[in-house]
Amino acid sequence: MTDEIHQAFAHPEDRAAAMAPADPPDRLSLRDHIVAADIGAFQQERGQEQRLRFSVVVELARGGGDAGDDVDQILSYDRLTEAIAAELAAERLNLLETLAENIAARILAEPQPTRVFLRIEKLDRGPGALGVEIVRSRAEAAPVAAAEAPHPVVAYLDNATIAAPDLSARLDRLAATAAPVVLAVGLPDTTRPATGDGPCQIRIDLLAIEQNAWVLASRDPRLNVVATRTELDWAMKQGNMVVWAPAKLVLDTPGAPASGEDGVALAAWLAGELAALRLVVHGPVSVPAACRVPVEPA
Image (cartoon, rainbow, N blue to C red; front, side, top):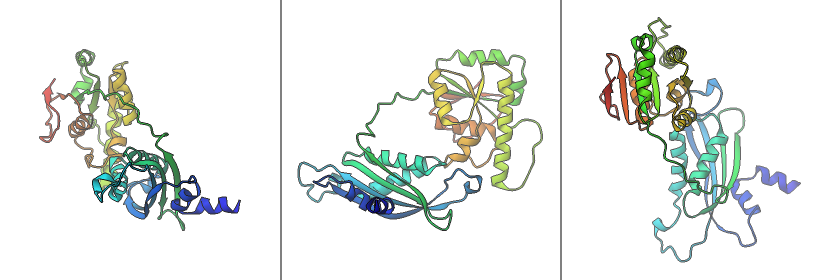
């Protein structure tokens, strides 16, 4: 029991050694790598970077010959720090557990690793270090061929279109396309609070847009409001027409628009993120020149 307790609180290098077979594999390690990141499930953690400490041990498959001092033939230390940086940049996460799973999967996608020991600790959430530790093997991370994500049509509807008596007919025309359709809206015509504080104001504006999304959904029984990328991906795969509630994706995605005042700019950003076939615009609105997909009027 004493050994088990010691191993439970030991560095991943000691854990890897304790779990090694009689013929131990080669190992690559990264110890006490500290990065500041915005992560956490509590509201007070949002928008506040905190220090994360990463310790990684990678067990390696033995090659059939000498690498000849060629860096391209080995797993570089940089691949470990790049895996951490890439997952932190991919999206804002609530849980260290999810981050650990994603980093381990990215490392195991390299040809050399057979097993990964990974510990992540938050250093600023209390008097000590709070964290998780996982062990994942290549067998557990066997790659599964994923179907190519469908390319949707993103359609922006202004408030006049939402209230138009021929709304259902317009939706029928969109639904007749061969691609799934994601609808986006902007701010409602009603007034909303003005705080003068950027982080607070974008949340207020995004909530107002989401209220407008529900107004649109109430006008046609085929429409549902979706907020997450998982919901969007599922709806697109099913060929469903949905209305996008932007708050979660905008607040959780690095590089997303920093303002909620321009609904068509948000729609253009979403179209780029989804690799949409085109952005269809209903109403006399101006589309940002930096839109990454073709734009056409309704």
